[in-house]
Amino acid sequence: MSTESKEILVGESSQAKPEKKTIVLMASDGDEFVVDVDDITNQSEMIRNLISDMGGTDGLQVPLLNVTAPVLAKLLELFNVSNKNDDDEEVTQKVKELMEAELNMMIDVLGAANYIEATSFFDLSCKVLADKFKGMSVEEVREFLNIECDFTEEELQQIHAENAWAFD
Amino acid sequence: MADACNSRSLSWLVKPCRPDPRREIIAHPSLETVHHHHNLRPSAVASASAAAPIMSLPDDLLLECLSRVPPSSLPALPLVCRRFSLLLDSPAFLRLRRAHGRLRRTLHALALSDLGLLSSASLPVDAPLASAWAPSYASTVLPLEALDGSFSFSHARVAAVGRSIYIIGRGATLRYDTWTGAVAPRAPTIFPRKKFAAAAIGGKIYVAGGVARTSAVEEYDPTADAWRVVAEAPRQRYGCVGAVAGGVFYIAGGLRVGGGGGEGGRLDAHVCAGSMDAYNVEAGAWVRGRPGAGTVAGAAAAVPGGGCVVGACGTGVHVYVVASHAVELSFWRWEARARRSGGGEWARLEPPPISARAGLGGALRFSCAAVGEEKVVALVHVSVGCGGGGRRGSDAVAVEGAVLVYDIKGGEWTRGPDLPPRLRRAAVACVEF
Image (cartoon, rainbow over all chains, first blue to last red; front, side, top):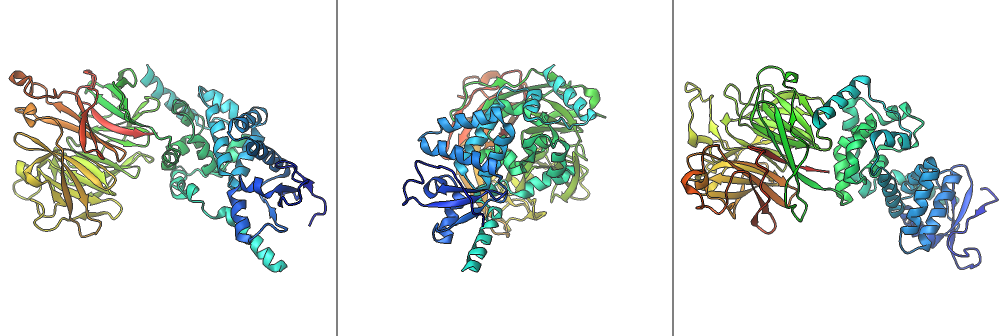
């Protein structure tokens, strides 16, 4: 496989202590990420199951077909925040910031979290996104998510008629 | 060794496709149904707005986000785009919301006058019970010209499908959107009916009875906005009530009309009063009771003690039935036996705290709705001009618009907040979201 691999510091001083076990996650574009076993299994149910299925972590390389390197890097960065904090406040804040700054990346991260079954992180991210809709009008939701209205003119008229009728 | 490694890696690569029990809740059939009906594959929709990253999420992930939206934000979402609308209408949406503990239940009372005035009020029914009904929306006058032909909403039946409540009258149907208050005309039943049985199962509505010239059971598909006849009932009932339990549509009580040969139209009050016919929707077959179990041959069951069924609703595998006797009311739970051969058990429960005498000389009318598997709500009316008079004070509960709540686990009735007076003769339905 690839000879060079990126060291991503997941958890504290993962490279300093030789007894810490690591595995390699491989992004879809071939980039490798060395992660601390405890830190990743703390988040990802799938990797936890995988390790127990494989009977150990020795030389384990996990190719993540659907996850690109930038997304995986971001996801691991957020896992790191989550692992360092006992409550979800800090990581929720980081996910919020990501959503405001780069919605596309946030949604990719959400998809990746689902892919590796990072259940509680996925829950948290979904909730951040869902809470964003609070108080938004239809138009504002469309604008925020960059969604085009795909109702036909007729359907729109009908929607307006039905609602005007009720609110009149 | 390398081979073994590879094969093991491979087995993991398919792993994400293996159903995760939690995800399986939003299983594909329902979503496929949604898309099938509209001929809209998610991919087709996604390509329409490829610029939106959220549209690249598969249905189940998008639903995971949508199902976590706070209730106050929900009404806007179906109007965002077609895909949102379809997803929010899917049964998977409700299942997910339930799985996340976000499901809230609201009782809606709807009253519709023949002049086209719709009044509605809602009552959150998750414990603790709210202390008063909130007017959902201002009373709305329906543009009657939108409805064709002759119709009547007196004795209309209501049935909830998803967030919509269908108000089914004689010759006209309306859909009331509990999120937005929007009201829209929908296809009327094929045969005009009055005082019929209606109930919703698996996103479809079934009606039976209330018409003399046919014994047809009709099924309504909200997606297609179309009724079709699915079965012929063993007898024609008028003034019956409907309930659903364990995938079976129960048609209970009422008078026998028409049919029978030679004596068409003759009414015999004792023939059907306490009996129930049961139609297994999935099997498309009538469930027959044990011989001698009912007063009517072929009926699935009959309320013990010869009462007349005046109200019914179902939840889980149980049907709850309010029966009226000469001077008292009784309350029963029916549980059908799992076996196909029919039969089942009645259990007598604490009767609702109302004397049948309250309606003496008139009729007590009930509209019942189940709230999850925890409560049964009975809304009680007395026909206008009856029940008042000299008997005031003789009964603890004044009945017009009284809301009685039966706690299934505790086995006790409590009195809920009365309906506002403007909601005369309302019917109730419970909506979850």
